[in-house]
Image (cartoon, rainbow, N blue to C red):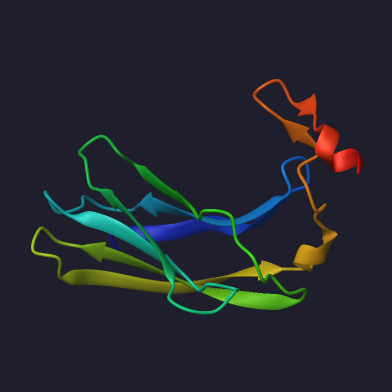
Length: 128
């Protein structure tokens, strides 16, 4: 294999009231010049998958992908993730299917972020 999935999951950040999914792919052997590694996440809210892509570089040994904030996450549910290694022409030369699991429902997050700004100042709107 070109890459091996070494970790991933769904992360709930209660401080900023967001949930994201992430996956890490480790390089197992040299990747093709001009290629990309792409991660496609099942969208818990339905609709099209969320796709993230990163270019291959000689020095990159790990590809970390994190989705934008998600909605619709259900407890005790697996969400499909597909990692593809693409050559310079965009052809898939490896496909790895895996999943991320959520033990929690999205309802555990607060309705508004508890903190705002880079210093994690209390959010006055969260007190309402």
